[in-house]
Amino acid sequence: MYNDYQQLVVKKEDKILVIKFNNPKKKNCVNQQAYKEIGRILRDVAKDDSVTMVVFTGVGDFYTAGNDLSKVDDISDMDAYVEASTSNFKNMVYAYIECPKIIVSLVNGPCIGIGTTLAGLSDLLWCSETAYFTCPFVKLGIVPEAGSSYLFPYLMGRSKATEMLLFGEKMSAEEALAFNFASRVYKPSEVDTVIWPKLREYSELPAESLQISKRLMRSPEKEHLVKAIDAECEELRKRFHSEEFINAIIQFSMRKSKL
Image 1 (cartoon, rainbow, N blue to C red):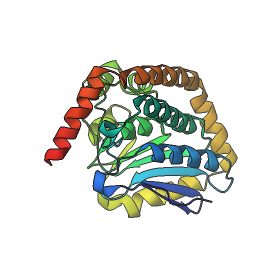
Image 2: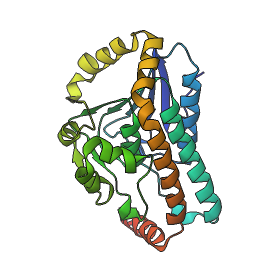
Image 3: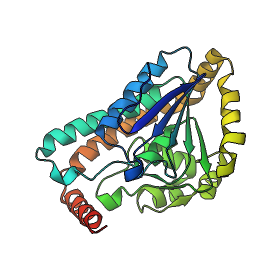
Image 4: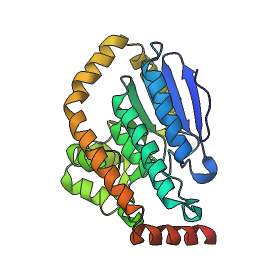
């Protein structure tokens, strides 16, 4: 039922579905196809009674560097690209907030852009002490995404959310813990001896009780998230056509070509 997809390694381990970002040559960044695949997987797992938990993590030293922007400057039909990318993105984010299973972000390293905003949507976020989080949206001429314009001020306070979403500041693992973004910071050496045993223990809890309890916890914020996601996607459509975004992509491509 669950197969590897482009840029993703997907594996079922007892009652846990593990999804690993897998694009190490590009620091595990993801493209539009990966968005579609993640949305599809989450909708499939929602109907799978043998799974109680979904764990996202990354292959290697990175969690994910976010959206793959390397081909954007080559797109000939920007209108079609914007419509498709916005639709794929929105469907993926909705799959996150609608999934009844416990979603865990096990952030094993740097987490950028969409990686950070999706991690914020998860039910449980644990991160390695080597991790950091950053959202360079304004630097790219775009706006916050995945409900972060609502969720980040709610979780970490308006001032820290402003640093993250408007100014693109990095948030360390310890800051993520202090600002209620993560609930545990672990040492890389603890992954197999402490972290995975604990997650497997959680996954064995009564499945129906887990899902009902999650729904009770998350339902009050769902209306706010949906409203934020819809507003963000509308602004993203506009920003993808803006001069600021186009110039940011040109500058991004020029920097990459010099590496």
